[in-house]
Length: 160
Length: 264
Ligand SMILES: Cc1cc2nc3c(=O)[nH]c(=O)nc-3n(C[C@H](O)[C@H](O)[C@H](O)COP(=O)(O)OP(=O)(O)OC[C@H]3O[C@@H](n4cnc5c(N)ncnc54)[C@H](O)[C@@H]3O)c2cc1C
Ligand code: FES
Ligand code: FES
Image 1 (spheres, rainbow over the protein chains, first blue to last red):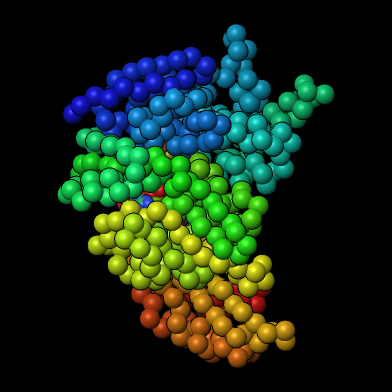
Image 2: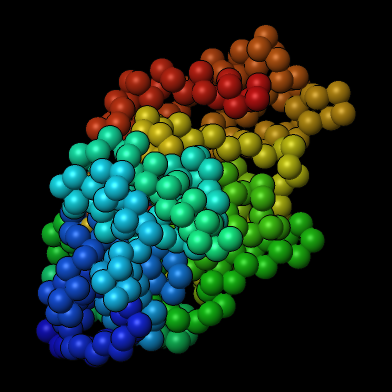
C-alpha cells in the first residue's frame, strides 16, 4: 500500500509523517506521532473517547482519515497543560472526581473545551448536550457535568 | 486497513473513478470509515471531491439548495434553516454532526437517515451530474446508484407547516426508535388540505405514510378527527428490528408518537 504524506499542526507544533493511505487520524496520532491522549474505545464513532478538535470543531479521530487533515490545526488533550500547569478543565475533572479509570476523560475534555470556547457560561443542558456523544462507564456522568460547570465558573472568574 | 483515498477537484472525474468495483464515495465518513474499521473489506478505494461548491448552503427566497457535503452542524446553525434545525440536530452527538453530511444521510440505512426522512416529507429533489430526481425515487433506487449526489433542493416550509420528531431511548442522544417528519398545509380554520408524512425506521429506509396522508385530508388536528389517520399508520410499514427495538414494538408505538406530533 502506497504511503502518503500528511502534515498538520498538532497542539501548536508542525507534524509531518508518511502514513498508509486509509490510516485513521487516531492511528496516526497514537502510533505514528506518539500522542496517546485520544483513546480508541470503539472505532465506531459511538464512544467519543477519540474526540479531537480539528480547525475549532469537535471530530472523531477514529472516523477521520489522516490524509484528509493536511494543513489542519489539530488539538488534543495532551496539548492543554501549559508549562506543567493543568488547564482549568483538567483541574476541575481531577477535583470533582470526574475521572475514574480515565479512559473517557480526554474525549470528554475535548468536547467540553469546544463548548466553553463558544459558550463560556453554559447551562447544565448545554453541558449535557455537548457531552452527548461521549460515553463514560465509571462516573455516572454527574461529576463530569459538575466539573465542566466548575471550569466554566473558574474561567469567567479569571476573565473578570 | 487497506483503503486508498483519491481526491478529485471535479465531480465529473470522480464519477468516472467511482465506476471501478470496490470504490465508494467518502462523505463525512461516519458510516463508510466505521464499516472499514469494523472489517468490511468490500470497499478498497475511496473517492472524494474537494470542490467547495459541495459545502454551500444557498437560501434564495423560499428555495433552499444544500450541497451534498453540507454537515448537520452547518444546517443546525444556519439562521435561514431554523425549520430544519430539529431534524439536523437529531443526528448523533456534536462530533457526528460536525462530520455527517446531507449526501451520506441519503444513503444511511435504518435506524439512521433521520435527516433523509425530513427531506422526504419536504419532497426534496436530489441532484447528480445526470440530472435531478424526487427524493422518493432516489431512495427507492439508491442501492444501485453509482452517481455522486451533488446537492438537494427543496422549498423552505413555513414554521407552522413542518414538524419533526425523533424518538430515542437514550437521552439526550440515541439511535432512533423511529422518526417522523410531517409537512401539513391547513386552511385558516385548521382543516388539513395537504399532508406529506415520512417515517424513519419503518422500513430499511425512510418511507411515506401514504394511507395516513390520505386520511388526514379534510381533518382538523383534534384527537377525534385524526383517529382514522392514526389507525392507518401501520399500512405498508415493515419496521426494522435492532438492539434498540423490535419491529413489533416500533409498529405499536408509531401511532402513539404520530398522534403526539400531529396534536403538538
Ligand atoms: C455514533 C453514530 C451515531 C449516529 N447517529 C445518527 C442519527 O442519530 N441519525 C442519523 O440519521 N444518522 C446517524 N448516524 C449515521 C451517519 O452519521 C449519518 O447518517 C450521516 O449523515 C452519514 O453521512 P456521512 O457523510 O458521514 O456518510 P459517509 O459515511 O461518508 O457515507 C455513507 C454512504 O453514503 C455514500 N455517500 C455519501 N455521500 C455521498 C454523495 N454525495 N454521493 C454519493 N454517495 C455518497 C458513501 O459512499 C457511503 O456509501 C450515526 C453514526 C454514528 C457513527
Ligand atoms: S474510538 Fe472513536 S468514537 Fe469510540
Ligand atoms: S472515567 Fe472510566 S469511562 Fe469515564
